[in-house]
Structures are given as structure tokens and as C-alpha cells.
Length: 186
Image (cartoon, rainbow, N blue to C red; front, top):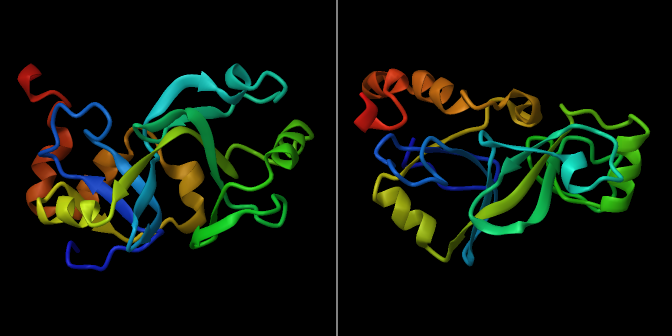
């Protein structure tokens, strides 16, 4: 799997050896863009204690906010699976889209046209400079997999998603599926 060419839409699963890194320990990242200049992704399995209404009071919804990564954590980003409703969105892959007209998005959430399985909000993102992600791949920091959930990943990914992905990998990874997040607590 590591030999697969990186491309947007892939999932990056943190290797169990990433311990002590608050952002990436047990993270699953949806790669939103990858080109010769670098890569951008969103951590999809780290919910924060905020809802969209906490950050934007004019939105009457309690959709969770996720930690998208350590870059620009003062900015709100979103992915969704409803490009026909949200103008100016950019396709990542597999029917998953990034961004779009935020004013329209707010109105659609408030009128009930957008549900929590259609959209995921993030504070910040994960970013890599040119060749940085490839170097991390060679250093065995990430496992690359296809996104078999396609656009349903928006509703699927939870805090246990990393463990589920490790179990699916099987083999030597199975032992890590039940290991404590902090091995010093073992």
C-alpha cells in the first residue's frame, strides 16, 4: 500500500509509531489535494468540543467541529457531498467536495437542507511542503489506503476510526488495535 502513488482522496492512517504527537497520533487524514508543490488534508477522526453554532451563532445547528490539523486553526474549513447545493465547491474525489459558497451553506443548514451526514467542519488543516509528505511516507509515518467509503466517509468517521482502519489492515497491525493511546499507561 505504501508504494501507491499519493493522490487526493486517499486516506493517510498514522502509523502506530507516531506516539506523543498531539495532532497526528492515531489520526486518519483525508488527502484533499496533492501536487508537486505540496499536500493538504483534513484529520477526520478528531472531534473537538465545539459545534458550528458555538463558532457561528447565526447557524442554528449542532454539527460537530473537527480538528483538521495544526495549520491555520483559527480558520474554518468544510468538506461535503452535496455539490449541487453548494456553489463553487471543488471536487476532492469520490463525490467529496471541499469548500464552496459559505453564505449559501449557512442558509441551507438553517433551512434544514444540509444534514450532518452531508458536511464536516474543521478548524485548521494539515499541510506539507513539496516532497515533505513523500519523505514522511519513506520514514514510515503514514499508511496510504483508498477511501472505500467514498462520499459516505463524512458520516462514517468517528473517534474510533483509526482503530477500525488498523484492524482492516490486519497482520502486524492487529496488536496495535487494542494498545492504549499512551503506551506508558499500559
